[in-house]
Amino acid sequence: MRQKGPSPNLVACTTLIDAFSKARLPDRARSMCNEMVKEGCRPDLLTFKTLIYGYMRSWKPIEAEELLIWMLDEGYSADQAILGELVNELCKVNEIDKAFKSILR
Image (cartoon, rainbow, N blue to C red):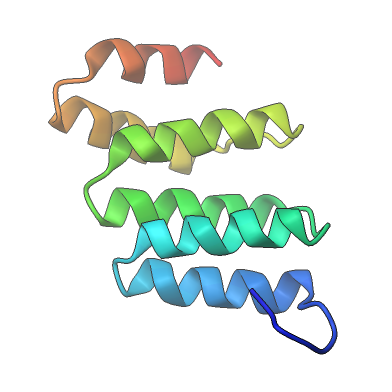
């Protein structure tokens, strides 16, 4: 992520993750998040939601669901909006079982 200088903070990393997500580059956004974690910076709820929406925006709901699981494992809660959209996107790709499990988490 960096070659020299201070470590980027949570706000800077989330801003970059958001930019990658909006550019439909969710894998780059995820790599940025992984680097952020490696540097000792824990993602917050906004970081997770940005990543999840980035994958949904790029028609990758299965990866979005994996991030939802990570987010929940970190102790954050999913709101109705993100769950509803994720369930909708999973159903579009015929992942009904995953959609149902997402609701039950």
